[in-house]
Amino acid sequence: MELLQEIVVNNKIILLHTCCAPCGSSSIEWLLQEENEVTIFFSNSNIFPKEEFLKRLYYVEKLANFYGVTLLQDTYDHESWRKRILGLEKEPEKGERCFECFKFNLEKTAQKARELSISSFATVLTVSPHKNSVQIFEAGKNFPEFSEYDFKKKNGFLRSIELSKKLDLYRQEYCGCEFSLKSCL
Image (cartoon, rainbow, N blue to C red; front, side, top):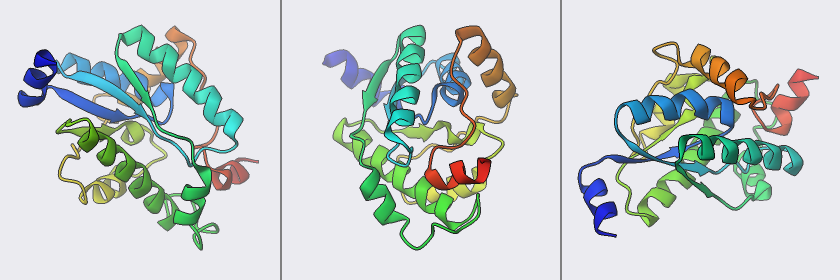
């Protein structure tokens, strides 16, 4: 416990919201290279169907084992997420529904960080070229613990592809929600 308190005091521990193993791969590598202690937080009630959620969780577990980092899993509660985005179902990708989804996931991560007395958290969502980092940072402004890492920088997305191949990670075709899945069909 004393070591954990020392790390927290030195701001070396970061809770990392992770949506999938590929996005997590280069993001975790980046944070570890900065000498952070990373704890993965898999909180993704937006993912549909539940089988997809479980598949992504399996590969995030594989990634956590590879890096030797702790993985925490939030309760899957798709109905709460659906209530949060109610009325935004027809919004386009990168629209208001996505912004509300970012806020939902960052709020869950902030709550977990506070529960664990971790003073900093970030999200791997910024590594994807399909996500608007400015929009994610805007959603994060509501949380003083939020650290603005743009994991696309330093060729983060290309590195995530390399690591996904190296580690044989599942690379999904859609962000996770049923509305992005429909746009892929």
